[in-house]
Structures are given as structure tokens and as C-alpha cells.
Amino acid sequence: MKKLLKDKKNVVIALLSVLFITILPQEGLRFLLWVLAGLVSASLADYWLSKLIFRRTIVPKSAIITGFIVSGLLDYHQPLYIAVIFSFLAVFSKYVLRFRKKHIFNPAVFALFLAVLFRLPLTWHIESNIFLIAVVGVYLAYTLKKIPHILGFLIFFTALFLVDKVKAFAILSFFFLFVMLIEPKTSGYGLSRGFGFGGLAGIFAFLIFKFFPGRDFFVSALFLANAFNPFLDRIKVRGGNWYAA
Amino acid sequence: MKAIWVLIFLIFLNFGRGYAQEHHMNGHQDQIGGQIMPAAKNLGICPVMGGEAKEEYSYVYEGKTYYFCCPSCTEDFKSDPQKYISQIKEFKLEAYQFGFEPEEIVINQGDRVTIIATSRDVAHGVYIKEYAINVTVNKGEEKKIEFIAELAGEFPILCSVYCGKGHSKMKAKLIVKE
Image 1 (cartoon, helix red, strand yellow):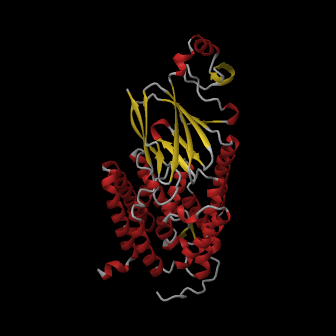
Image 2 (tube, chains in turn orange, cyan):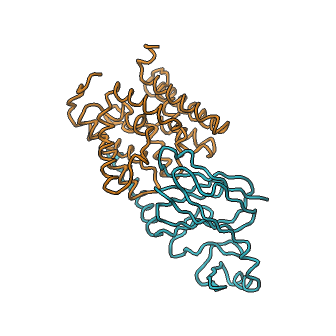
Image 3 (cartoon, helix red, strand yellow):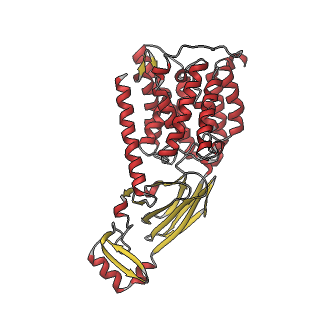
């Protein structure tokens, strides 16, 4: 069990599975098929693309997470091929949009952002138990050293909303904060880098909420913050071990 | 790297277009069969034929101005206004964290429907997939959604704009009886 929990991807997969099972009785068979379509599409894409491009055989754990997030956020009343296409695009972006041998965009966020551009609604069904998300999320953020990201986001997000007289916590997504924002490979490490990344996401979230109210401000903000990764990478990592982990 | 910046530029263009469109409509956006109408032509649908109403074809009846798609529709309406007015079903739909009021809108197939959407708190979306309706409504705004109920059945009305922790639970129902 301890060995299993050591890989944080397993923890995230377990969390997403529980969230999915929690909401399943309410949403029914259609939601089950929708999420399965996303999971299978993302997993197969990751497996084959890895084999094709890097000649590596992988267990597509990241793709399972991507599939869960893409299909869990997209409205499942759409035709099934939408889940298949967007989950595939998410994984595909990981292999194509790269800078210095690293992918720039969080794959799920990339696909969801495309969905936002195509005006597909995001219903966030996977956010079914915020207490569980918060508890597991704090554990993940702490062990993955992502507390600065969360703090950076919260400070800028709440401050800007306060100025605009909107209760930030009333519209804050825990799933975004504790699962999407702290994705390890595209959010960087270190105090300054993490705080900067979170802060940028917070500022973008406010600006999109304010000026583009029809667009999903969390997904769009994270996409834009990801786009700044090549610049944020230049920040020297300081304070990476500012707390014990 | 350049490709990424081109991508971001294109995205901003897309966002900018949406922004200009939404602000140009200035709170009286109409949606007919998925087509967002510009504010200058925000006259809804013709109560006779259901086509896009035009400013040049209008008729004032009991103090209210009705717009039509063609001169013959105007004449048809004049001959028996009540026949057409009785087919227009108007509803108010208020979105709030986390639900819609009322939870059900019941209409008959063939009805010309007007939904006046408002928000009690934060920005919400009114999304009915089968009728290609996806409208954002901010607090204090009133958005008019018009369509002809051609499809019979029960259709979920969902919120398409993230509005807080209960966003996924925001549901209402559009029931179109045969």
C-alpha cells in the first residue's frame, strides 16, 4: 500500500475514481460511457504515441488522469466522439507542443481550452466531493511541493475579486486548485517559480472572469499560465526545500 | 516557441471577437437556433413563420410592437392577432447558486418560446444542447432567448459557466409536449 501511494499518480487516479463513482449513480449510464470513452481514448493514444515517437512501452497512468479530467469536466450530453477526440487531442498535445524536451501545456487543460474555444460547455461533474478533494489535495500539494502555487493563486485571485466586490471563495473550484493547478510537470518547482505560476493563473482567472464571462475562467487561466512556462523556467529555483517534504 | 505565441495570438483574437460580440449586444442578446443575432437586428423571431424578424415589417397591437420576417406575415398577423399571440410562450428563468427557478418549463411542440434569463448572484450559463442555446447571463442582466419548440421530449437545461462548487448540480428541465 505504502509503495502504491509513493507514486502520486496512483493517488490522483484513486481520487478521480472515487469522485467518478460518487457521482455515477446520479448521472447514470451515459456518464459512465462518456468517461470510459475518454479514458480509453487517452490511454491508447498515450501508449501508441509513446511507442511510435520514443519507442518506449509505458503504463499510461498520466493519460488515465488526463482522460478522467477531460471527460469529467466536459458536458457528457455531447456525442461520445467528442470525449474521444478531446481526450486524444489532450495526449497528442503532450507529444507535439514541447519546449526543451518538456511539454508546455497541461494536456487536459489544452484539450479543455480547445473545448472552450469551440463553445462546448464544461459542467465539471467530476467535482463531486469537495471535502475529499480538499483533504487529498492538501496532501498532494504538500508532498509534491506545490504549496507556493496554491498560495500564489489564492492571494492574487482573492485580492482581485475583493477589489471587484465578488466573493472569490463562492466561485473557487477546489478541483482546479488541488488537482489541475498543481499538475507536476507543467507547473514547475520552487518557491518563486511556483508562486509566480500560481499568481499568473490567479490574475488570468480574474481577467477572464471579468472581461470574458462566457469562457471557463479556470481552464483558460491555466492554459495561459502554462503558455508562460518557457519564461517561468528562467526563474532560478530558490527555496525548493523551504518546507520539509 | 514562435508557434506557441502565434497560437496564443490566435486565441486572443477568438476571445476578443467573443468579447466584442457580447458587449456589442449590451445585455439584450438573442439566440435563435444557435445563431446569435447582432444587437441592431435584435427583434426576435417572426410570430407567424418563425423566421428572423426584420425592423421594416412591424405592427403595433395593444401597445406592443411585433416584428415579422416578411410583409405577408404582417398581413396574416393583422387579420387574427390573438391566433399568433396565443402561440408565444414567455417564461422567466432565474439562475442562482446552484439551481434554476423554475426547475421545469413545460411547453407544447410548435410553440414560439421566449425565455427571459436572469442571474441572482454570479455569472451563469443557460445551455440547452438540443436547441443549440448557450447564453451567458451576468448578475443584473436580462437575456432574451427565443426559439421554436420543434423537438418534442425532455431536455436538460444546464449551466455552462463555472459558478462555484455546486455548478454541476445546476439543472432544470425543458419539457416539450407533443
